[in-house]
Amino acid sequence: MEDLPPPLLLEILSRLGDSEDLARCRVASKTLNSIARDIRSINLQCSYDRYTKSRSPHTRSSITPFKEIFIKLISNLEIVESVSMGVEKPLRYGAYDDTEDEESDLYLSDETFSMEWLPKVCRELKSISISDFWVQSCWRRSDVLSVISSHCLNLSDLDVKNAWLSVDGLNPMPNLTSLTLEFIRLDDEDLNKINESFPSLQDLNLIGVGGLREPRIHLMHLKTCQCIVSNAPNSLAIIAPNLVKLKLVCVKPKLLLIETPLLSDLHLSIETAGNFKVKNLHDLRKLHLESAGLRNLLGTFPFGKTVRNLTVVSTRWEVPVGISKSTFELLLNVFPNVSSLTLTPGAWSEFETYPGLGGLESRHQMKELKIITAYLTVNDIEMTISTVFSILENCPKLSDMALLIHRDVVSNVTNNLISRCMAHCSRIRWKWGLWKEETKDAWITDGI
Image 1 (cartoon, rainbow, N blue to C red):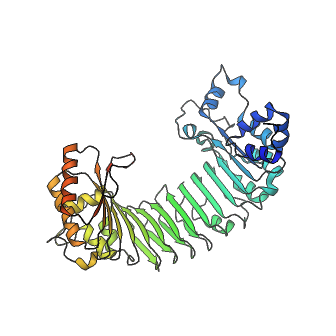
Image 2: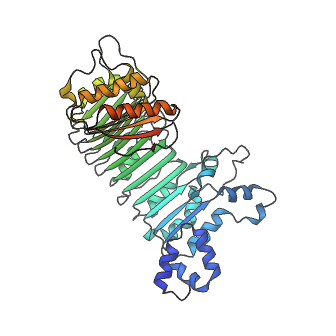
Image 3: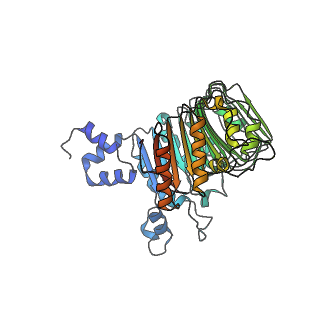
């Protein structure tokens, strides 16, 4: 292997996923040791096995501290463009009742530790990813954002997980275009410091971020955003004139404001919203809508005519009252131009039980519907078949129907449903599959 050209050896070493493997290569060969200094990235993850050995009285003395290994590895590199360090998932999400809070070897967002290595490599650094060990970081307030913003002027990508972050001393980072904060306690309840310090963000991911009261995302260059709020803020506002893709998961905001005129792909999951304000979504084409109060949400939905691809998730079964329309009919009223519709179990079951008084009446409302995907429980096969046939009769342009049947439905019922549907309408291209909670969907036929 040492006879290979140095550029090829460098390419091979650069593809190693773990910097511990790189360290072993350096020990094994003088040539590899020499070439490895030109590697421009470091990726070091603490495994569950390493952690348990470091805690055991029988093996602790033989385990080199994680931070010590990291410092040594990064000191051997000439130029560093990317740094990724953290704990592996089995360690990240486990329960550790015997862990001493005073331990700090896996407290990786520690600003003192960051000052040991960051100033030496910050000049060319483009990407930083830190995945902390929550047991050691949750009770320690970190100023690592201040340290990073003071030294990494060319940083474009920052990812921090499982930490308590302060925004004190946070400096502007005009070159940062991607920011991910995941399972973070953030001392910026309205996100003002985030908006001010990262004005050029194009990709923002706030996943399980706590400490927010009235968050307001106001970023002029933002294009994609994922916001999964772990607590219940009083209000939530997203103002981003160039945003095209948004995933928003929030519980019960009193005010939800979305000003994103170029948005084309929206994943919205809310229980209820006291005041729902959406402005000028003229380009919205794809919508995933999830709510426990789906009927009320649809009644106040301010847009929908441009949506072509729609997925509906009803997390609580709502019984129509009086002369109110079924959820299916409400969907067709709000989204009259949908061509592809996906109904999850709750939405389908409600429509199956309450198809609407007099059935589906407004044929013109379904004139664009071409593809339906539905998740069936088949509690009553006759009712399920009647619902399928009703859809077929009222959707003249429907060409594809994909039906996934719950795995607990007995095989003879499944086979009966499949054969009767296919015999009833030959113009439809049928696709059949199986589904079950917390398992991957499995298709048993494809387009027949």
